[in-house]
Length: 375
Ligand SMILES: [Mg+2]
Ligand SMILES: [Zn+2]
Image 1 (cartoon, rainbow, N blue to C red):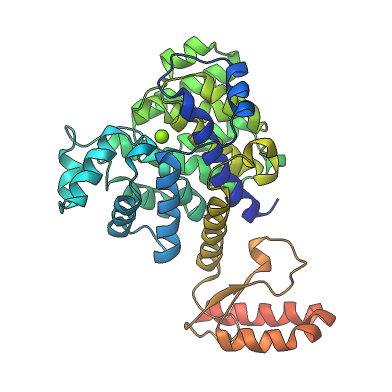
Image 2: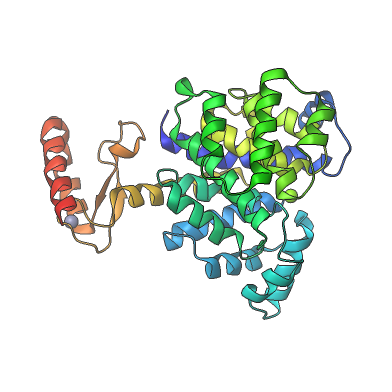
């Protein structure tokens, strides 16, 4: 499966989870039949703040090539829509920033030591995708994306954990996926004992099974990052390989259902890719086209990041674009090339000749890649 399918799968998967959980947010518990009935009787699956803010995170990364907290908060304020079920912290911060306050001050004061809610983890998916090849950069970026609204270490750690789960899902081929290996990789690099304890509990639940009651009482279904990020990871791992089952279990837990399902759906969608998400769900998804477009833009920015910032032929840094010369080729990162406008035009002209001699292209590319690295 290509990385593009994983990026689109992650963004759409998270939005499907968000929209499926929305009608059940705050409920004590729901049956899977009730959830399926809601989906089949709805003409539109409406998304909430989780999706709106994730889209902004992705758009900001596309524009800036990194996580830029000032740009992020500006985008959050601009797209703020009180009807979308924002959490208390985020509402407070966005209202104050909108009225001229500096997020650096507000985010520390919004609760004792900052908020520990899941509002940063629920929107961190694009960070996990974009930085999937570099865990150090990933943690730094997850933190930067978190602190504009959620400053407490437990909120930041939750965002890092969710981002890492997404990143691992992006770099893991499903044929090689093992849920216990996945869980062990997640524990590495975690600073917080509280989260490590939760991940140990997940391992126990995966080995011996757990009732809905046990999952809710021991992992949690609340709006705190510590009581929802591990739960989302558990529902992903317990149903890994089955997107539908992942969402149904996540929503059935009730509580902060939209966010838990959005986080687990984001990880599952990334691991499985867009084609494993039920079409009868995606076709009803509000903003589907926009989400797909943003996911693709994020992927192209990611390709740029992987390939560098120079034209791979002439090494110019100006007007560089991500191009795919062979339209028939798959969407693996390796099938894309960075070209400046001049070289792109040249290539377009030579295209026919190029495809007649595919080896020439490969040679070309290898030579210039080497030159690029030397520079
Ligand atoms: Mg929500
Ligand atoms: Zn060039």
